[in-house]
Length: 347
Image 1 (tube, rainbow, N blue to C red):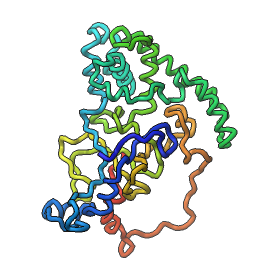
Image 2 (cartoon, rainbow, N blue to C red; image 1 turned 30 degrees about the vertical axis):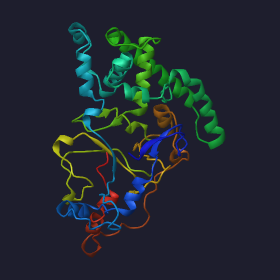
Image 3 (cartoon, rainbow, N blue to C red; image 1 turned 60 degrees about the vertical axis):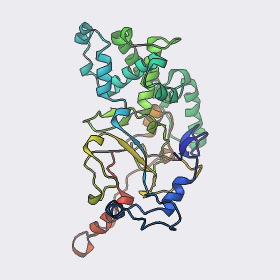
Image 4 (cartoon, one colour; image 1 turned 60 degrees about the horizontal axis):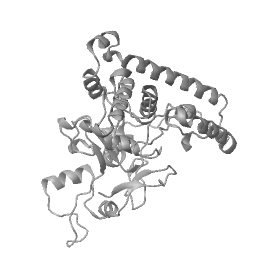
């Protein structure tokens, strides 16, 4: 209940998600500590052993700030189920949906739900999306992105040689995809008033390119995550963590999960691997975790280049010998004792 929209976002974006009250901060600093061992002890012995003062309300410290169940995600399975009921069998034989990858299926699903407007059960998610998607090849704001490339050269001294050409190539490829989808499936999906089928598919394609999140193949290798995809990027924050369903506190995991929770995504407030007790006005951010992205990849996919990619970098091999980690040098057990503060099952 302490989370809400911050407009503008502290990170510099037009909006973000963060704390609008201080209850979370007070609980994280005054309630029961939340290591795996202490959580287990609280389950076995729920007496208020960790209360700051006996007169204070007793809460359990909780590090998961957002949990998005699989049923609240746009997935490949949902797209196939929805599209199969709309497209005639003869079209399915000529252009089988099963042959499409997850990204294309999400484009069709999002475009159709966008066209349904008030009749869509995904309306709250769709109205939360920016009117103009933020990928680098968004047709309506393409001229502004060319200005941004010039600004990155002049103000950040970023190496942007050839970027306008690459952006043009990406735009042509995106238009090719949108036109092909419109030809094969356009007559069978809903389109908003005032938009053509191709424009609606371009809108959906750009949103999927800039907002979709990688997941396990079991539930869909690419998904759209309402609310979670409104979190802004910070390379020092924690990532999107997908629940497997076998997590146990006794094994050092930061949460206890049942099998039916498999596929859910959870977000924690982390900075450099350690928990961060956010105060009112502070933003909940997440690491998009795409280390292989070049600055150009960032710009084309999401429409910006994060600060950690402003400067050129190269991998430096260590010059000192590797530290032994066997025998008396074994620190694995000590690290495991702090798993709650360091690790999660990152994607």
